[in-house]
Length: 305
Image 1 (cartoon, rainbow, N blue to C red):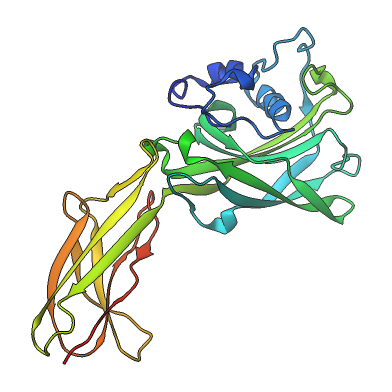
Image 2 (tube, rainbow, N blue to C red):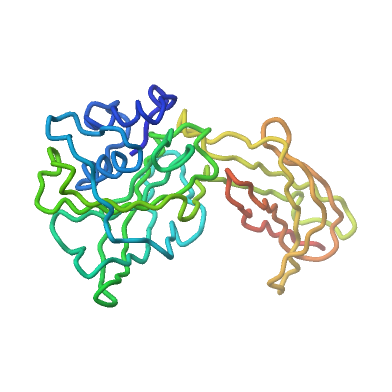
């Protein structure tokens, strides 16, 4: 679940109270995936020591579930690249090791991964939960599990780009009503900071080399623009003051060679010159940053005569 800007600044304790009624959050914000909301509340209740349920039944304390997590991966270790409109789905995988008496296939057993920003799993400022994992047994006490994290760019602020921590949790409700449990009968296992993930603003890069054709030895002007998604207004804007390589690939070759590095201007535009030598392709290439993925323009062919 992700808290929008209107409530993103709340403390961990206040965030837990917001969890009492997820549907009451802003209509344009994400909701906890089906089947995960109550488990998330129970997990946070166990790790923070604060009540996450508003009912009278919230009088107990979850017991430590005999389960742990390893080999956690979010989007196969790659940045999650998000544009301006399309819903993005990122795969999650992990190994769940558990006691022989833990039924991970029970209808009311939930395991998931949460991306978060903040001190730790119990005191996050922002969070995004995966779906309930599907687990395949590899032995009587271990399973390989997969889930999905879904992110709509409309939920995000530009400041959300960058590194996030990932925590994992599992909850066994053991027949209790997930929305109104006696927590003494609920088992919870959590693990902080099991891996990290990057949310990145999708980038685009263009190139145009002119004139074409051109006489050998004459000057070629190469222009282009580096842009990236703005999650707050739903458009792409120039990425300013960024180093970008001008590269050349000779006709018949498959390898680009860097000719020089220049920086984008205040609107993300690129302009430089080079000499015409042989037929080939010019392109710009951007190495990327924590908040923005690497991108290379499609090569523009120049016929040298």
